Image 1 (cartoon, rainbow, N blue to C red):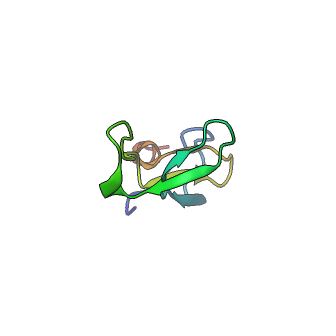
Image 2 (cartoon, helix red, strand yellow; image 1 turned 90 degrees about the vertical axis):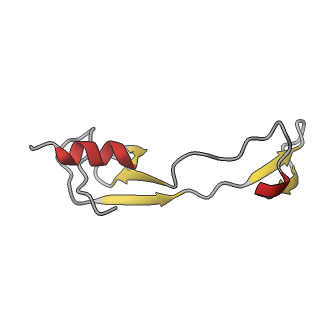
Length: 81
């Protein structure tokens, strides 16, 4: 997070952002009620349950509300106005 950002949607915001930290929970749910039956740790995942491999952070433009991967904001931040 030491790179300049720029919003790819509104294209003017370079200063106001919300950094959203993503914390994944692996769970097994009841298909009828949606109740959580079991919370699984990474070392106890079943063969059909893949671990989360998405980004640790998402960025939201605090001007227009766009939420994207951090790399998108960094790429637009590298481009001159």
